[in-house]
Image (cartoon, rainbow, N blue to C red; front, side, top):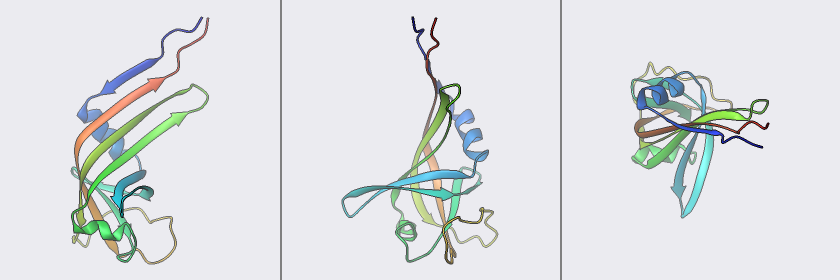
Length: 132
């Protein structure tokens, strides 16, 4: 017989800690009537996520103040457990020349830094139940 699994909400402080402890996340947004979700390497600055992109890319067009979602998560196949943090915010161009962002994995020049001020954070820890 299976026991109920774990589904627990995280508080905002734990969500922020997990976002700051990782470097790969996903940016979600609507463009031309389609929902797009694109992985990025990122850094943080206070309550903002920062990533580098090309100004002419679909991510570069977020600099105009687009509403976006940002997600980071982790999953362990062996234990069938994991967590997820989802935040919403507004993207904008980040002009601070000393932005600390990881090198993007995507090829090409990535000279534009986009900042997403994280608001409305929600996080969950989940795991599958155990069998008897």
